Length: 137
Image 1 (cartoon, rainbow, N blue to C red):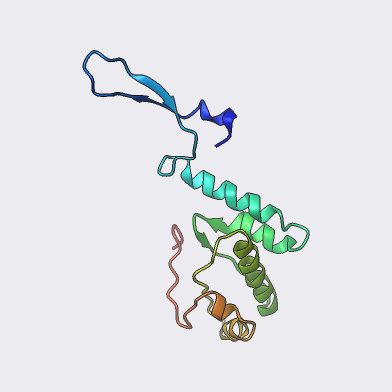
Image 2: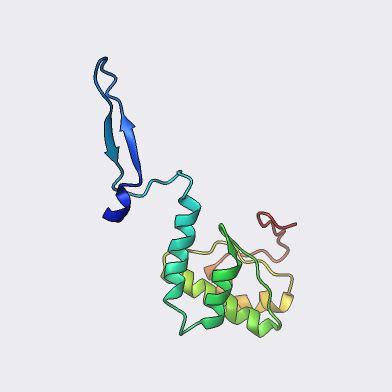
């Protein structure tokens, strides 16, 4: 956590001794489980994804605009475009230390291309997967 931001995450500490006053302490590390954690995840992903803007401009746009929590829901005009976007997403996120665990598509052709290009080995996918995306009906 940046030194400039530490003053915004302070808390009271009680030593449980009667008559003792509370001590004001501040966090020096990011506190997961606090309300801002989804924001921190999003900001971290956006930071890492932004490094690839020149190399994968369409993929960066997709990851910036279609990623919700830990789900990415996106479409493409052609199977080749979908292959390019999915391969780019796997590459970008892997380089940043985020390993995709699941790919899903209703296109048998795209599934075959994933296997042919090694994405099936790198990221698990089921041929008849049931897709559940948080907030998507």
